[in-house]
Each structure stands twice: as structure tokens, then as C-alpha cells.
Picture 1 (tube, rainbow, N blue to C red):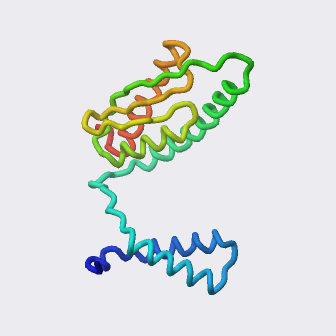
Picture 2: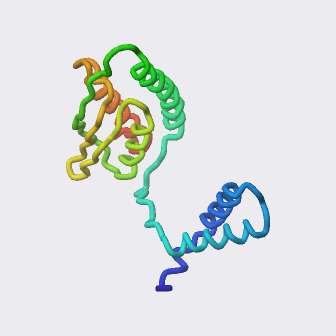
Picture 3: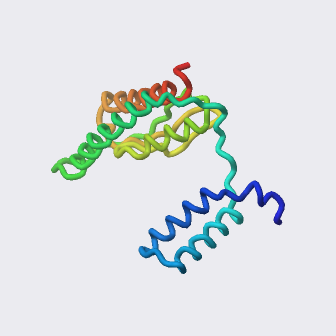
Length: 170
């Protein structure tokens, strides 16, 4: 049971969990500090996480910064669009479930792309087929072929951006 404790113990994670516990409790006290340290140690030792598969990815920081700025702008536009779709005096638009191929070779990058897509209103990745590198995507507005094509193009653009940022534009 105690084998590998040295590999499980992560002091920075314990410190972070302790800090979060103190924020959650809303008061810095000796009791909250000790409780946070105890809970942090218990979580780190009893529930170890596997190492993150990084496989030597290099990050293009300039492209990442541009992506984040564009992503936040797209977030505002998508939020306004979804708000309009829900508040207008018209029938709700048809929705659709699509299968979209993905060229991302790294699973961590595929995960990051999935998170970026799912955080935007209007579409959600409902399934990831790792063997075939396909997303199953649910889109909110599929009233026309143009809307479906636009959403597929958005997924392909996200894929190109992730490749440029993390996979060196292969």
C-alpha cells in the first residue's frame, strides 16, 4: 500500500490544495491551514493522478496568445448568438449531431481542443472516437446547410490552430 509514496507526493499540489481550502473556508487560521494540509496530503497520496502525456510538445506561445484572444472574442459572439436564439419570438432552430474527422495526433492536444470547443456556447463534443480520430458534435443551430457547413469549418479552424500551436504546423 505504501509503495511509491515518494512518486505520489507532490509538494506544489499539496500547497495549492491547501491554498484552495483556505479560500474555500474564507478565513486564514491555524485550523484551516492544518486541515488544508491534511486534506491536500490525503488527496495527493490516496488519489494519485497519472503523469500527463506530454511527449515533447513544444508550444508556440505567440500563436497561443493569438488563439486565446480570438477564442475570447468568439466566446462573446457565440454567447450573444445563443442568447438571441433563446430570446427571439421564433421557433427554436433545428439542431444536429455531426461526425467530424480530426487530424490531431496527440491525445493531450485533442483534449485541449475538445475543452476549447465545449466551452463555447452553441456546440458540444458528445463523443470522441480515438481510434478513428473523430468527434461527434451536437450543434444548436442547424437550420440550413450553410449553418452546418459554417460549424464544420469552425471545427476545422480550431483543429488547424491547435496543430499550429502544439504540433508545429505539421
